[in-house]
Length: 330
Picture 1 (cartoon, one colour):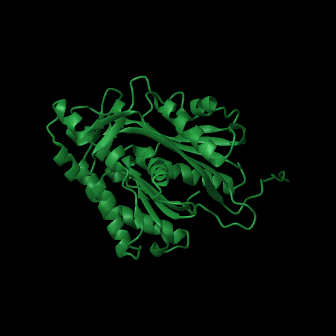
Picture 2 (tube, rainbow, N blue to C red):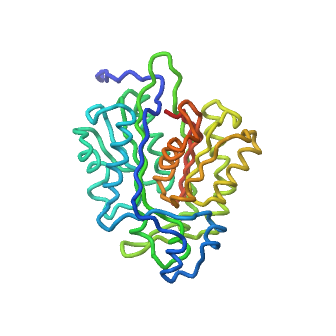
Picture 3 (tube, rainbow, N blue to C red):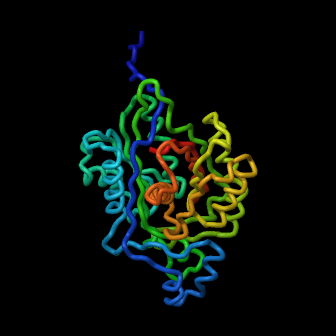
């Protein structure tokens, strides 16, 4: 007879406990990009992608540096100490080397000792994949508190003279702390709606170790404006919600035109006119896996969202990978 394997007791669900973010100090305007010889203008960039400025990290400022700062702020916001964290997940696709991973270094520098720490590379959908993974770990009873961070230094991977990428991508980090719901409380993080379109894998890629990031912008744009709103609606369906329940829509900040198109689809499906829509891309650029938590933290600081709001998150990008979930804001 085979032995009986003990399992940990599951819990009702997970919730967000705190947020944090970090952006580099250096602001790069559209005029700055044009001044270095790129064939573009401020008006052209604003019209096509909606970006006014973005942040670039210093040469000596790393993905891990930004992850550590954002993660520490999220811990403080949650009122927890490093010793309270049972796992650290870092979503990133821009580490200079994948060995060692970002999560192990980040956990150590924050002071989280002995906990599992691993990276997730789903590009711009990475933070949502991280939230989904952490939520499932908590619900299964494997851990109690998880720190999830999205951190990117895209300026290391973008050709500064390639107009299709250099006007869009930027650097930064955003983080969230997750924990279990208390007895009798409702879950604060819904099921993840995720998938991939592998037939389009070549539309966003870094071909080899000596290459810059390249992107087929028009093809990605067409895909995003038609395929991502259904993912968001599926996340609501899985959570037993309707578009009218959404207080805040936070799509990955890829392009302001894409964000606005997703919002139009959601309102056509029944979302309220007063639904707040994240537009952090205007002043932060596209920070890949960092864009959703950055936008959330900035919107909270600006007073545009409040604790208890229902937010619909949806990430999408290279892979092409996509994921979304409904969450209650801390």
